[in-house]
Image (cartoon, rainbow, N blue to C red; front, side, top):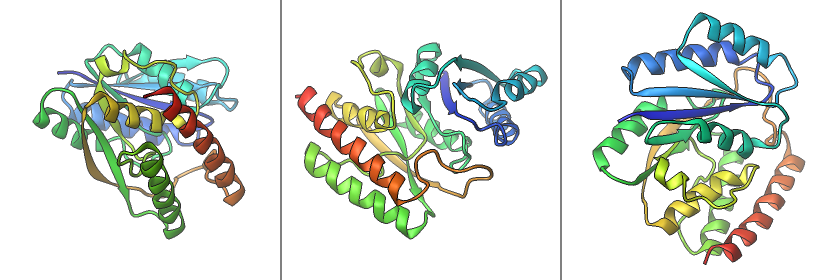
Amino acid sequence: MKFSLVIPCYNESANLPLLFERCKKLVDAAEGKVEVVIVNNGSSDDSDEVLNQLMSQSSACRMVKVEVNQGYGFGILSGLKSCESDVIGWTHADLQTDPMDLLDAIRIYEKQGEQPFVKGKRYGRPIADTFFTVGMSFFETILMRTGLWDINAQPTLFPKSFFQTWDNPPFDFSLDLYAYYMAKKAGLRIFRFPVLFGERTHGVSNWNVDWESKKKFIKRTIDYSFELKKKVK
């Protein structure tokens, strides 16, 4: 069985050399079972040049280029569409979760058999961020009437056949909610496993900068949650 891991990158040029090294380590450890797809998600920094240089030195990863950034989810979807493996998924480029976590996800996936949905569950986060996540998890669980916890945790791994059933998925951070909720609705068995959530090595989050950014994220998420509930009966 082959697995594809998509990693969307937006203005992450400072992180890319270390990310690439982690991905090479992952590919080597997986002994040919994993392909890594790095998506240059319309970056305005020198990510394109850095990625081209890194990939000229190793074939451990391949790149998908999005010319104009249309959101976090759009970058992931662009990468997923290019995947040829039977099992696909994604993680983040900021290295707060290690790409090597995919090995644990693969072990769970292979052990559980057909049609599981495997997702990390973060620990080691600041208290304020944990409180924020718990609050959003309670809201989504009550609204959607199904358990939805730590929705934005990574990595996320699922059958490609499940992805092919998606209808008009969102282009922003709501993609995590969409995938998780649709897996529940489709009857996929959900498996969570612990992943250490560390600090960013370089740069800052594109949304988790301050409470004003969090408020905007909350509003977008709530608006989409009501839209998704209405759309999916």
